[in-house]
Length: 163
Figure (cartoon, helix red, strand yellow):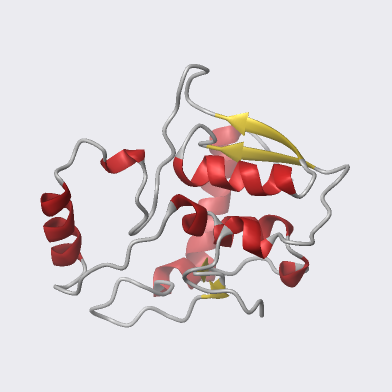
C-alpha cells in the first residue's frame, strides 16, 4: 500500500503532504511516539492540539520495542533480557520514537491511507493474522465482528454517546 516499513519515520511518511487548514489531536503528546507524531503533523502544516496527562509533563505509552522515556528507570541489560524473553527468546529490533510514530502518522494523514478504515496496521503495513508463537500480526479476536459489536455497545454505554 505505502512502500513504507519498519524503519520509516513519521516525517518520511508525511513528506510532501499538505495538511494546511486541518486540525490534529494527538494523545500522549508530551514525549515518545506522541511528540514525534505531533512534530510530523505540524511539519506538514496541521494545527496540532496535544492531549497530555498534565500540562507540566506527560508520558506517552509506547507499544512494542520502541525506546522512549517509558523505560528510563530500567537497567538497559535487564530491559534487553526481559524484552527478549517476552519475544520468545528472539532479540527485539528497537525503533526510535520517530519510527514508532510512522504508522500513526501514515494512517492519520497520508494519502496512501485514504479510504482505509477498520484494519490493523503495524510497521506502516496492514498486519497479517498473528501466527502462534509470534508477537506480530493481528489477533483473531480483534477481527471478530461479534466482539467488535460488544465493544462498540459497551463504549457507547460508558460514554453515553449513541449513533
